Image 1 (tube, rainbow, N blue to C red):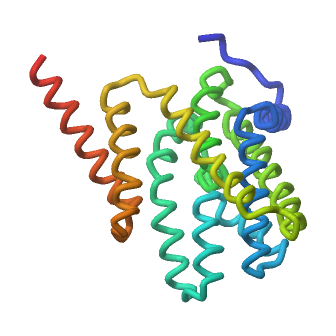
Image 2 (image 1 turned 90 degrees about the vertical axis):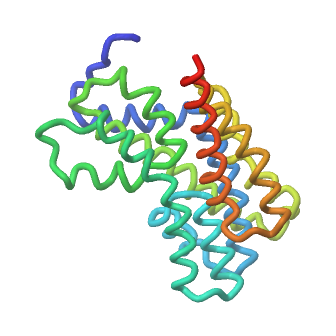
Length: 242
């Protein structure tokens, strides 16, 4: 591991985070995804500024697709909020894993609000990769810059997709939405070193489509619960046998 990089100030660390986001592989992926989300919001009759505000407040492409689809289909606000909240639960373990990297003994609670709110899969993966090379003093500023960089790609490309929606073929819009899960799948496959990680990935790929075809309610949640539990059980049995 390289020596920690020392930023002269929180401002330079913040802009260093923006630069890292702009050069990340997730930057064009997020841009392409939000072109599709912008087209989706247009088709359901939401305004472009509503889309931008929801990007800032929700900040998770899958959750935004759920929100737009639910409200656009006429679901009650409470039902849409519940669905978005259930989708966001998957980010809690990422926040828990990120906090020890950015928190210091003298860190104030309010300093953690922005990095925890803007924790997404893309920001989390890049933070785990880049933060160990940064000086701890300015890691929060760096994370905030990273999030602002990704959020800028999302909101600007959301506007692009919104105003291109009239001429954007539905198949292309769907393909753009598919960029995010594919990028997460590839990064997860690359980083899966332990048996439990590889098993969870395989079980998830098998269970997800199966439960969806069977029209099982909360199929994503059950895929994670069942696939993760079975993967962990197999891993522990293998360890016990060795």
